[in-house]
Length: 415
Image (cartoon, rainbow, N blue to C red; front, side):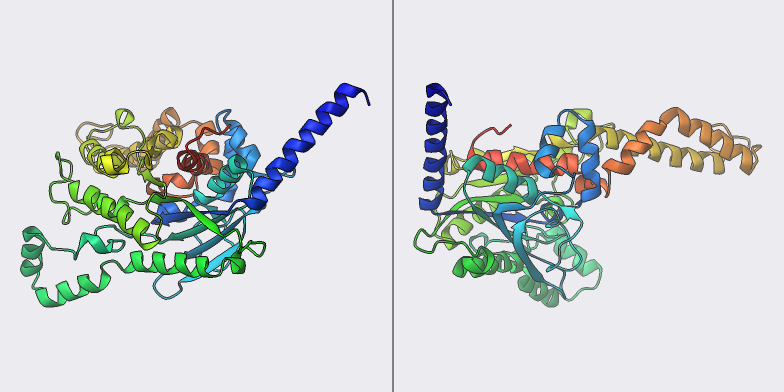
């Protein structure tokens, strides 16, 4: 070995030992992930394959699998995941790997991922030290009721909601009592679980150094659907200011989480719901006002002066798979045409009702082939595993969202 090689090797070893020393002397970085069904995650592991076909997602795919193509096990990332339905809530924990998405049995590894998988991969890559993820997520939950933070006060029905209850013959005392019982329940469950994990970190991460302690390094919020569609709670949705109550509630949520966890400057990332993709690419303008207004309401706390520099919004619409959306739209057009033919629509081929059933099928098949290619159908089989409200259950989308959450939390760009 020549002198230059020896110097290079010595320098590299010194840098490595320095990083190891830093990792051993730093408090354990803890990240909290919370939300509803898209934080749970509905992207099946089987959809990883589609990531190899796209030069944009192929580098991310390579971080997610080992040499055999199987999902990696992150030996320096631990996770505790609390989830489940009304009668089967529970926790799964261990080293991070694929399977910590939505699952039938909370304590058992599943077949799906949420943002946590690539969040953990890329956060650990950036920090080069062990990290712990605490994830709590439940499908179908709102911030106006389920995750309502304490400082937001009780849920107050507006006059439109009250009139609707009266019209349906509901007992208002019972309705209000039931709402009071539901309000903040999942905020409490989330907070209880975070505290449980932090009170005994070694249960989840056996190598935890109690002397060094831990640091609450970030909180990621990915929610929204149940508020966006709540026309009763937000009667003016789609209009300017129609979702201001969401912004207000989320700001209270950020303050309360920081207060309750005694982490006043903990970084907070808002995953802005992007179901449907970029607004300018919507095929129909029907939902643009509602989706646009809600996205702005979600992102709004990141623009508040009190949160400057430590609350960030990640716009997830840019990760939407437009190819899957176009295919879905075309499949819907085929279904619509089948109805037109069957019902003798005046503007379509069978307006006079003369087509036989077999002729309608033949016409429909030709129409379908014009809109949908065999390549598109083959792509959908490997890229999609759920509905559009769950980002099509696409790993191409969910993996990039998780990576973006890590980058926003750490305020860095990762290759």
